[in-house]
Length: 372
Image 1 (cartoon, rainbow, N blue to C red):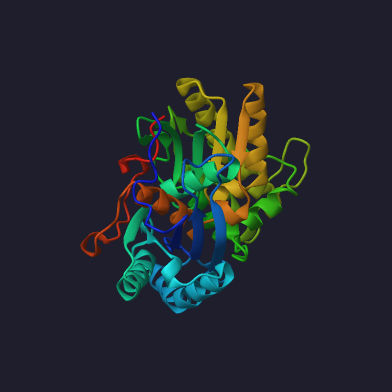
Image 2: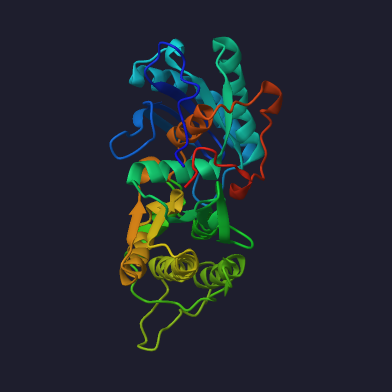
């Protein structure tokens, strides 16, 4: 059955345009997207009109606090909206819907962005659509890569999930039992006092490329789920012993090489965590009989993760799909895209229902725009 996405096309208009506001963590994004009538396909692609982002960056060794992140978003949101409209060469009369991240995410930053969305809605008399952050990543990943019905590995600072679509829901087959993989990498970067510019995960990746010696770490896959807090505690202890204590004995491997280097610890942490992700993703592929994997979320930019996943998928004669940092890292265009899909099905969010939530699971969303 083909879903009709054009029941709510405004008279006299030949396309739909949405603006999306994203601010669930330290990235503030504003995006503008255009859909043409009909089903999205390889011959009818969504058109990215603007995709602007600004990141709140803290000093090395520090994380970002909700209060300070919210202040950053408040300071920048109007400027980014104006910049996005200028880049797209559009005005308020061209926009059909204002989309915003409803959750999950950090409470104060989410609230700062939804206030901006409400204000625009009232000033411009344009309807609102609240978007699940995770659904935004998935739908944008599908649109950019052309993946049809993949197993989705969603890896970011706040989420780690293995997902597959079934009966208008994105079903979670496995997930972290404690901290997300991006949070694990970010917190280890703080332990090592690695720069947060452009992001701690990116800088860990660069150090890991120089690593040659693997330090054995706990491997904690539990069925389809995984746990990373114990691994972080274990490698934190190693790092503190090596770098912060006087007269610390250097870690030696069996050839007697000194492993007292940050790059080897970063390499080891990546290899351990990514191996766990590959294992549960492969198990999900077998369960749903899929030969496609789509990697989304900020950690999905990591080249080593993509490489390890590609080896596994190739062994199954499958295909791997991933995007670059424009769409992997949190952005406004993914919120605009997912929100516009919902809007085209007739959904809007009343002002009274624009309350953000820090807990909003992927499988809570009814995916009306799919019926395959």
